[in-house]
Image (cartoon, rainbow, N blue to C red; front, side, top):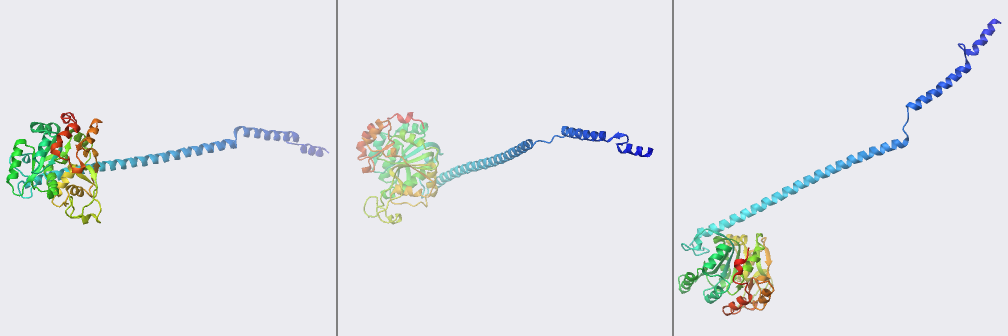
Length: 407
């Protein structure tokens, strides 16, 4: 009986501890464990995870944008370097172009000087004359094309718009403006006509003598020799050809040219495109009319022959290539043809072909004096010997204008 009591006591507890207390202790331990775990192991809420993900994406996007901007900046720098190199190359090419042009001009001058008095020389060289001196740097050279029979025309110009004697020399020295009557020699050199020009030259000292046989049908050749001669004698910005029955305002002409001084190759005048005359016996007949297309066609644009201007590079071009440049019957057409196919700027300036009074008078009164005046109907001033003084009085810029004009 005593044994049975001992067995019951053991079933009711473990090691003397009541089963109820063991269960209570286990439950308490479970809740304590849960409490400790929740306190030291907080799991981030889903919202916070999303925010971190968005922050990471923004950071990656920022880095990507910065990388793209850096690439663009590097590309821009590379493009800038390329443009800079292109600009530098262009400057070098322009410098070389100017150097070549200068060398060609020097070559032309050397050729003219070497030929001297030889047959085919573009000028008549005499000891002590301008041809033997070194080339001077001037603003413009004006050649007034004249003939043996035009003594009265020359005198009418000397009495109006062209300075004489010491004033002519002062104009060259102070303003860099050279003016000369341009003439060749007769078919019999040393004859009466040539001696008359020699006497006139001794009196006025305002001629440029060419190694050229005078004649109406030789004007294209004379024009070619004229430009070859002046570019060898003077280093000018511009070279001008004008007829001896045209009125000029030298100051206004200089102001007009000064606006184009920076341009390398200009051909200036009053541009026209007249008909090609195929009929024989008429004035301005063109024997080579067939080269200009069908009968009735017009010429290409070219400056009218009363006055035109070319820059130094173009005068040099004529001088260097004068032996192979083709000459048509009309000298203004010939000059225009020499520049076809070249990089030349044609400037149509209507102040170089104003009419005689009242046309030029109205413009002068309005403060816009013309650089040149003549009558289209006469291809010059009609009866220029009698009317040059009138035109000068009514349309001239004033005798002192040339001295007060800055170029």
